Image 1 (tube, rainbow, N blue to C red):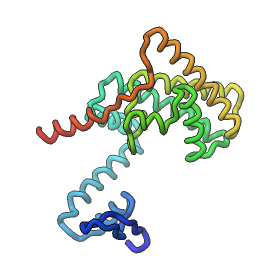
Image 2: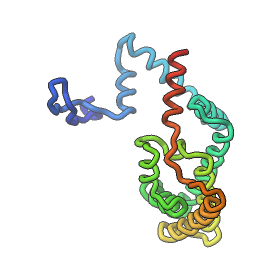
Image 3: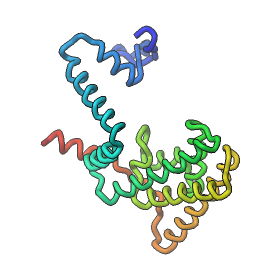
Image 4: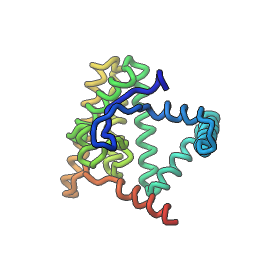
Length: 220
């Protein structure tokens, strides 16, 4: 606790800001593992179960895909949305694999390139797209509608294929590929919006759906 916990000010019962011990999720779970109390036993059993499931997924990656599919179903997503979400993730993984192998650093540089692509096709940044949907810590793609997922995947697919064709190396060259790939998806988006009269980028999210599913389970 001494080395892993920090102290931040939070509002106390007396209404004043008081220094309070805080820790990240990993540290909290580790502390629970070390607590010699029957009350901690359910969490310890859950950690053991999750750990075992993770080991199974390492041996057989298909289990991880099936678990993701089941989790999305539990949150109320239909099969069509799930298929599109998984296709989009596969497209995303191929792009990030290319970046990793061509001098783009995971983390900040991945985020910068992702935002360039997103800004180009959607004409809104990732941050503002999340804000539009009323999201905070949630994953933006988990709250995209089918059309948003499709155009996001098209932008990233186009980016990767352009990068591969010119052998883009490093941030500068991959930024160019990102803008071009995003531009292809933007043109397609605008063409569809013109034909249908409907905007692709939407403020809709699945927050209410997820909450209602949780309430239903508690009632059951």
